[in-house]
Figure 1 (spheres, rainbow, N blue to C red):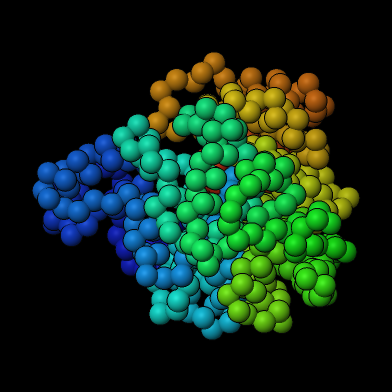
Figure 2 (tube, rainbow, N blue to C red; figure 1 turned 90 degrees about the vertical axis):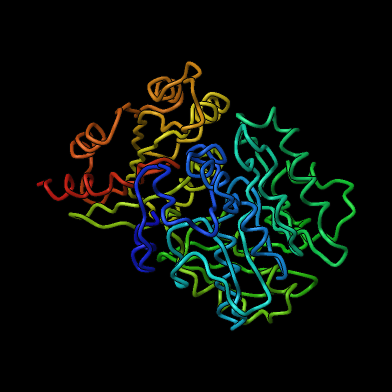
Amino acid sequence: MTDETLKERRIVWKVGFEEKNLKPKPDLVITTGAHGGLANPEVLLARKLGVEVLTQAQAIGKFMSGKEGISVCGVGGKTTVSAMIATVLDFAHQKPSYAIGVGRINPLGFPGQYAQGLQFVAEADEYVNSPGVDNRVKFLFQKPRVIVVTNIEFDHPDVYQNLDHTKEIFKKFFVSLPEDGLLIACWDNPHIKDTIKGLEVNLQTYGLSPLADWKIEKIYFGQEQTLFDLYYQGGVVSQIKLKVPGRFNVLNAVAAFAVGTFLGLDAQTIKEGLGSFGGTKRRFEFIKEINGIKLYDDYAHHPREIEATLKAAKQWFPGKRLIVVFQPHTYSRTKALLDDFSRVFSMADFLVITNIYSSAREKDNLGVSGKLLAAEVKKHHPRVSFQSGEKEVTEYLSEIARKGDIIFTMGAGNIFLWHRSIIRAMRSKR
């Protein structure tokens, strides 16, 4: 996903991790939790050489320091809400800094920058700093003035015991807000309600609930656009227009609206800024139309994200057949949420399940597989097929897809790399 950005920035990258990659000696090494994290061979050598080492989470915390931090957390929506906020601030000529975990943002372009403006917008991840080496929570390195929480779900069974453990981690982040800070929380998510109950922080809520501070009404989907009205403190902002689909994106936009208002932007500027937002890579991303078949891609990998994306697709493309190719991500998540996964694909007309894309940190398949997941989904869905990999998926799609269909590739693994093969197969159809 980042190749294009690196090329445009003329940044050369190397494949694989070896000690020789640290020649010439760097001034700083930043590592993610993937590929061994702090146990990566390049990191270990850097420390021997006396080179400063930061994790990605620590680096974001340092970049945010000295700025007015805006942190967006939650199991789904972090990327889009962060991108919407950055877009609105940029539209308002605030020259924001931001670090967003996506390949590209329309219309901003690159997913990160450090600029002269006061605000720094960042995704705030509840995963750990470096699994097995440093299990401090990533978002606790950020010290924001504003926190947005989109939802709370049980999503990392490899590091958290259960949903209650997850809630406690989020609560710890929320109470770190300064006295003049603000927590903006989605009131439609019951786990958020439980988590923030009794917290002594400045709070604004948003959602479809009539009890939310920022209340959404009159949502309309049509002609590939979204319209809605927004009520707050007795006033209304009418006909807010988005170029992106789904109720989840309405919620995302309202979170951004609340942030912009708190920062002093006027409603019309925020409204126009949101209207300029065209989406991000791997979030309901249109890839190509081939012989009347449209190919889309989405990062959704948790049952709640999948459910929301499929609902949005059905609203965006009424009357069209929806073919979903889902690549499960990690054995631990698939096992822990197997029953949830088995029930969330009802809106797909055809569903293809692939092999599980495992994480390098997982050493055991825990007795689960893509084939097992497909069998579980078949208990609730009549048209499910297990196709192990790229070749099998491509051949299957070439058999069943027809003009007018919408194909969605979905998952947090490498499924987006299969698009070239799928496009070739669709071109060869007669």
